Length: 226
Image (cartoon, rainbow, N blue to C red):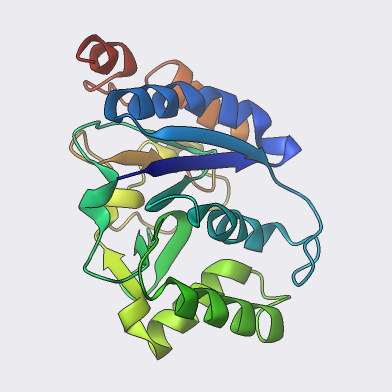
């Protein structure tokens, strides 16, 4: 299965991306996946310069050359190499994503997998239609679009538990600014990745650089098993 792990960042997130890249490089080396990092913040014919749509657009642009394209945000790093990207698939559904970190009704678009299935064209057409006409200026642009598709056509989107693509560490609450919401299911060492959402960049970098999560399946250990 030809697979690409895609990531990237805008200029203000580049230092965070640099901190998370070692885990992504090692994971791809471990499983034999391709890896590509792209800049975010460009003009798109339909969506203009709207950062909230660029992750999905980039995945759609690349998936024609692959069986699967996984997008992982700059502020997420892989903590358990035992998972393969095909583990997140469900039959012919072209899109897989985890539940959001605070509720059980919506998915997060920060980390996802796009599969090159027979239903991929349907998903792309709905994403373009609803995104460009209904959610162009919504605060959660692509995420709201994808959740709308999930409600209207659930055969296109596979909903995963948080431990796959959206587990948020408990330590994130310590660094969160003006945030009182609880984390529904915190990260643990069996989760695929840790998503350092809604905290300042300096603390995202600190958590990754200093291994404040005490990740046992760390990069050096995993590379030693290659």
